[in-house]
Amino acid sequence: MRRVFALIAGAVLAMGLFLSPVADIAVRALTTVKNPEQRSVRVLNYESPGHREDPVRLYKQAIAGEPDGVTNLYLMGSSELGMPVDQNPSTWLPNNASDFDMYESGRGNQQSLYHAIELAAVGPSIANKKVALILSPQWFVQGGVKASLFQSVFSHSAWDAMLANPHLSAATRQRLIARVGSLMPQLCTLGASCATTTASSVEEVVNAPYNVFTQRVNALRDTYKGVDYRKAVRYTGAWQPGRQSMATIDWAAEDAKAAATGKAKVGKNPYNMEDAFYQKRVVPQIDKLKGQQAGVTYTSSVEYDDLQLFLDVAHDLGIDVMLIPLPVNGTWSDFTRLPKAQRDGFATDIRRIAAANSVQLTDLTSKAYEPYYFFDTLHLGWRGWLDVTHACWEFARP
Image 1 (tube, rainbow, N blue to C red):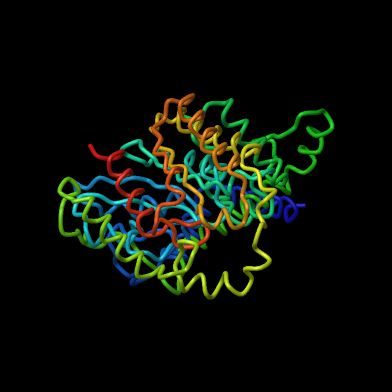
Image 2: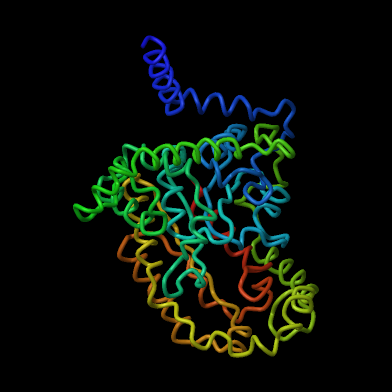
């Protein structure tokens, strides 16, 4: 009998330790890299491994080495953050700016809903209480983000941090839980209930032990993946400033440089995109791409509700927001027959939401036909990224 009690006590103790912060500390100790590469606060997400899995810890780590007098802005977006152009702030800022930096957070398929969770998790660590969100029209298709794609970019670590944030209102928290639960029902537990009926409440109770255990395993796994032992980067090295303060930047001259670079890269292809991309990725399938977007809509999507959730999180946390709706590549969209009413409707809807929520808006949607504005069929290029960086500085500057 004593052995049975001892086994039960041992199991209870083990489970208690597993669910406690002790487990997090142990996992982080296992993932500590002895001699990580030292960097300044530059080039975050697409170079730094583990950001998606453990965003709170890696953001704190990234800004830890930032000196006084440097303004930082938390910039959220998706796949455009990985565009290999010199004007991408991850490249342009280190080469030019001595007093401004941006923490770039985003990857393909991270849209408004994921960023709402991340903001709720990271928000208490954002000192200047400002965040910019790049909005891609492609997010706002009917149905919004697909469940499989959302799950592929989801962070269990950020989810736990969101649930633990005491500054998030009960109403916003519950709407986040319900929306995420519709895409990942395994997250519905007693502490994050999605139940709307007696039957669903009973189901949550029955499934609670398994779901709590699974979520804890996933969160610890995210913590473990937060450090890539093959290529560890610690952003606590010496700051490597650019040549000048942002106040002295000649933006007209920089735009001319961006246009010259874009002209050389685009060449004579008819769709205002980098020619190497065009020749390799577009030309081989151009016949079947013609008219492909004729039935696309950007004006009826649950993504607008997800964006409102993001803005409600920001309001709860006292964070100022700048929305940056992007244009489509006009010449390419004409070729694929994306309806002009949908392009214009997206812009109108974002303006309405920004006004209703009293948030700042940098509306780039009129730039659809600007030369050298795009890298490919939809992502920002040389002049496009320069405009975003300029707007972000104006928004973030003290």
